[in-house]
Image (cartoon, rainbow, N blue to C red; front, side, top):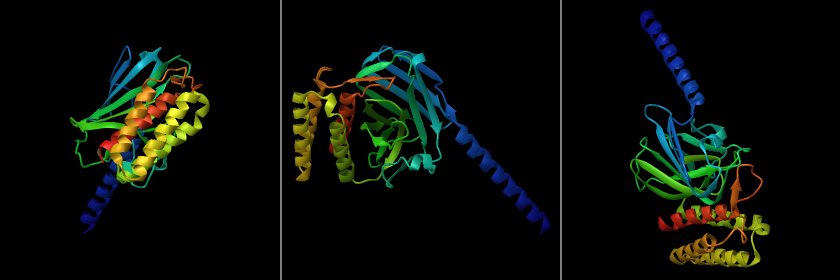
Length: 281
């Protein structure tokens, strides 16, 4: 009996110590790219967090300024999915970190490096750690300056899992499981779109502002009568209007110095992910 009790205490100590070491390792596991390529308007990076978890990051710009490897810090971090620094930034109790891929990727252009871009940037995360299943709502989210995570997904696909989105600014990116209803997701995206317009009217020309207001109204009116097809047409139309808008009509530049708001990039980001949600209903 004494032998059994002693062995049990030893086993308990080993398990506790191992758990502590694993937790400490996970908390400290912040990595920089194993490989990094910057070419014209494209960034490609591979980040290895463990023998089982790697992520390939791709960022593409329509038109960038001052883009080079020395101007941008890229890291990936293994997270504790229950960490309050993550859970407090989730948009809903129905969203959560993915247990098989609890990874936060951060893209941080250096403020004094003179880097900038016009319009939207495409961001893609690819990993073999989890496998694409159409019925599992894994989505790409972003958070700026420690704020709430926002769905920016424009594509999810196999091989093993690939998620793509667009952004008008940079900070943190993460794959989350989103169990909210489609209606809740879509209504939230429309509300965010309206808020972005209202917060930046002083950065939009009068004629374009009227066209944007009309387009947002068309989207809201279609959704009010559950006409998702009409809403999708209205979204596509508004995307086309913004795609063709120049910097004279709307603020369309993001700079690492943080002194301007890329309104065009923000609106296109929200419209493109709204289109994705309407298509996957």
